Length: 196
View 1 (cartoon, one colour):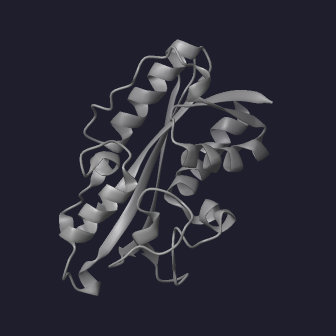
View 2: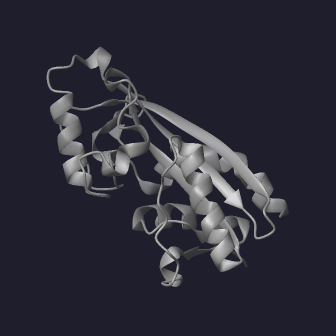
């Protein structure tokens, strides 16, 4: 199997990418396998900029093909927030419970028809030779008034898909992996990974 380093320490993302990439013959190596790698600051103003920052850094330091994604929740009522700050919306990086609590507080009393939201993901693949590839995927839904479901991570418990009658956190992983923003972005980049 060929190696690809996932530029993330998020266990949920690691599980998803392993499930999506192993059938293509890629062994997904977690970032934790490189403890000396410097902390990567996501200073970009867009998902694409942040994904490229992470993938370039990891490809440079590891000498392997690197894959990074930057993704987040864009809520129409909040004019696209939390957006690129989704993981640190409430202040501390990766505090899912606090992020959801803040989101629900800001959405208090907002009628159903104004609770539209979108998960957006941009994936960057950078090779040690410096080739760069980008792909984007989105999925539309609504923000519930309270969390539902035990699966997934991030905002999954409050992101509701009307066509499934469930949140991302209630969907079986194999279903989520077929329809998620990440899966849709990855589907666009699979051909590149197939021939590289």
